[in-house]
Length: 567
Image (tube, rainbow, N blue to C red; front, side):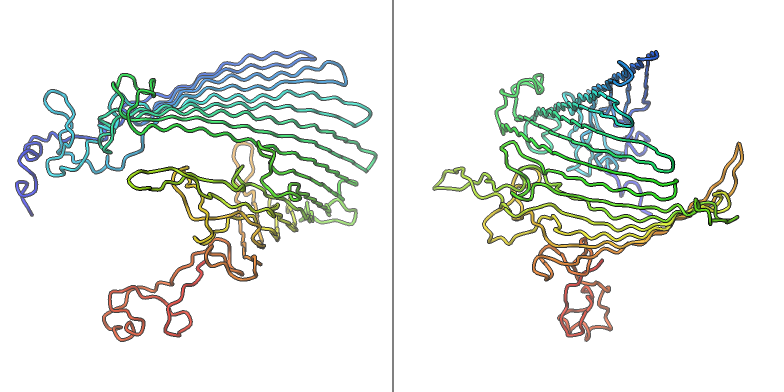
């Protein structure tokens, strides 16, 4: 076994002999943290008016010394009946949360040398504290004052409603919702923090606000005549959301005491950006339910949704495809309610079936429009800025539709001591809405995910169709049921098979890793069998390999290694 003198440098050896090791986690973590939450509520009720006001405060200290969270919240709920026909109400919630973030749980904390010295005799931080690991950075420098990594959220959600009952069984309700949110972000990293990355002190401010409006008008009818029950609902809905943001950042400030309060004094890498987004959605919904003697149940609904309309009046989807229509129907037979049903074992038995269509147009606003992106080019010794094609438009883009058949059986045995559900379903999705990769020679690129740089060209298209077929079973056993003790067991089983049924040209789209008959998400790779061994030298040579190289499967036994799909 080697001696300490053979392992440690002289400076480290003194620390080892003296037992004065550095606990880096102790320097980063709080020794004690306190979390507290306080709530107070006031409630009032009368025959016509009910009201509740709730105020709360929450304070949490994180594990790291630079990490904490505070939130203030206030909510008001009010319901008032003006007369027998008309009722109004208000629900309002307001919250303000402030969070100081840890830059990132730096894994280097676990590798810091315990024999290193973080500070010198005068209390100044030592840049590279480890004697042997001269490139190892003092992790404490990441969080030296001034250090700011702060998020502040202000959110307010408000719903005002009026409900009017007229005739016999008819009711009209109007809900108007206003959703407000603002996020402010502050960042400042002093020179001690940023010098690790070879740059001056850095500051950034960002501000994003959102305004959302939701207006629902609901007409409903609910009535029972003898054994017949009727329920109908008709909804008209309008939704709109606007988001705008701004940020500015820079490096190299004349004094660290300015922190992020004077960004215009930055001398290097000054960046300014802003964005705006607006979308709207219109919906119509009708639903009718009928029941007879609680044993025959029928439900029919129809929904129409208009796709998002952008701030410039254009649509995410193409002209003629902006509206999607989605019907659904379901029926159930409660067999145990029949007069002929007489069983001492089976106490409940219901057979049901349904078919419905849902749609998808979940594409970020503006991502389907043709756009340009900034490009740089050199002319002589100077650099100039220009623009190039940054995305392609698809003028035939439409909704994605998914139709699902579902058949189920619900049962209960021995007064529901044993109960369960058997379910079979099949979903067929058509006009699959996906982003298709394009070859480089298409002449366009897409902006990078962070808004900087570019990524391979792509375009949204209705690609093809898929199917999902599955079976689910759930059984629950109430083993012991007593006043002060209960024990139940639930078993679940399911199976699902997904596959691509068709694509644009009824051929595999290898560049996107889409293969007919396989799921959407597959690996397209070589089948690795291990490593060629010494005794397999001759067999490896057939594939231009040698012992020690990866051993790949010859799928067709034709002497050629092919890529395969792996689910």
